[in-house]
Length: 293
Image (tube, rainbow, N blue to C red):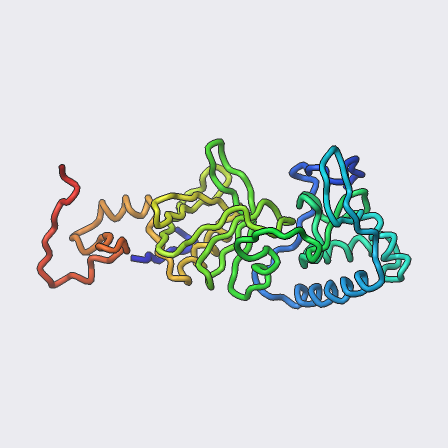
């Protein structure tokens, strides 16, 4: 049974493809709903991209760095030069902001998705020049533009502790999508939440407000939000998408202590769905222990 759960309960780089440090990337704003700003940025980016492509823009070619080859890319600082020369921007700061809009709207991206746009010797590529690849799941920009989707930074628990990623959940597909960072458009992991259950923790785990997603194959994913309000937002979004919200372990302990009958409990039916035993009240119930050897 889905339980009710409330709130109470930048310096110059010396590498065009340099791997970022965790604090070196300025993150793009997170749009979980279509906003006027997002739509304006999309329109501006589309028109700007058309002008850049029509007029030649910065030199796009295959480039090599440290024995690695990066196809059909351009240098960020050369795009800044071009934007100023074409009167698209009054100065380098304005040109950088235009570049960041192109990144946010997924018209361009850093070749290894490790940098936001900046006036530096960094390799960027237009998405339309991307080498053919198999992309599974929506892009981050697509999720941000979806009316009912939620996109936020969450910490995922692994063998050696928590690691931060960007997660997006789309009620339309009932799937959870994991992205490496704010600048990565393709998913690194996709989780089908059909038949899944979510159990929130009432108390923080370290510095995170955690919840556990139990998939149909019994695999459990533990995610943590920085704020309790963010945790609540995710729980509500899952609940609104007909995903079963289980009581926290604290709630279960209280239920075990205060239960007056079997009708206070839930159980899995033969199809693996959580069922409230309350619906069998006033009927003859036979309790069978099927786990005995």
